[in-house]
Image (cartoon, rainbow, N blue to C red; front, side, top):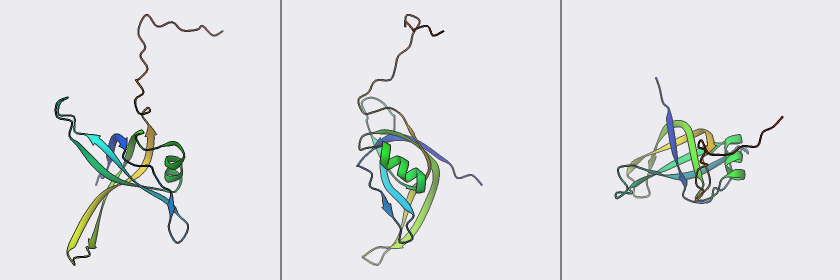
Length: 121
């Protein structure tokens, strides 16, 4: 069976590194992902994610609120009982890998046939 997710979006808040009682580090974070319908309809989805161990520590060190991030991982569902006594289900992405996608407001590098390069010997 396949359970694979790849997302790209922006962090919605500053990631905070936490640890389990056993000392395993993790970060819960959320990314805003554009639905991409059109320029006029800028709807997006807010996807909850969790990163563990080295992935969590890497995310805390290099990513901040508004950072563009690519997340590769898997979906996980959890069942729980709400304060009202109702049974609920949550869905989140368990991030196996996170990658840089540029900084907020940073234009992607443009290279064309007129771009000059320094020759290295």
